[in-house]
Amino acid sequence: RAGRVMIVDTAPGVDGWALVEAVLMDADLAVVPMRSTAVDLEQLRPTLDSTGEAGVPAVVVLSQVRLTRSRSVAAEALTARGVPLLATEVPLRERIALAAGTAELVDPFGELWAEVSGIAAALTNDRKDP
Figure 1 (cartoon, rainbow, N blue to C red):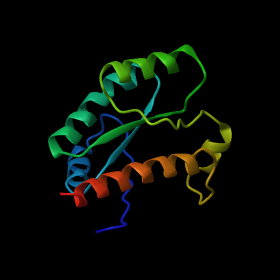
Figure 2 (figure 1 turned 30 degrees about the horizontal axis):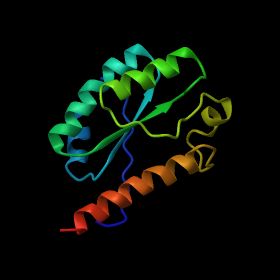
Figure 3 (figure 1 turned 135 degrees about the vertical axis):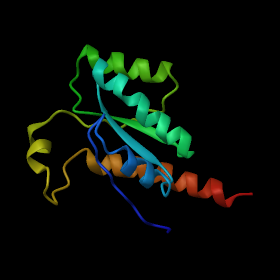
């Protein structure tokens, strides 16, 4: 089990909740991507409810971020709701969109991986300590 990574990417509100819930049964951490829109903020609730019911810590990463007011409003709303927000954000960039489905690792995914790996390692260490 140690060292395994599962990435499950589903659209919000799809009929895939059974899959999400099954994966959460074996997860140590859920990383939930969210665009900085009011609609995405509302669609986040069922996912966070599922992670909470499964006892899996969840963190949100803002994706397709533009440096606009909506970004700061979303970040403030998440913080006000007590939702853990990663420092790394995925910007809205054509290069990222074009890399989908390829093995190319484009920025900021290296930073994002490092941040998520650090959180996962801390969770693992917390479980080892009595």
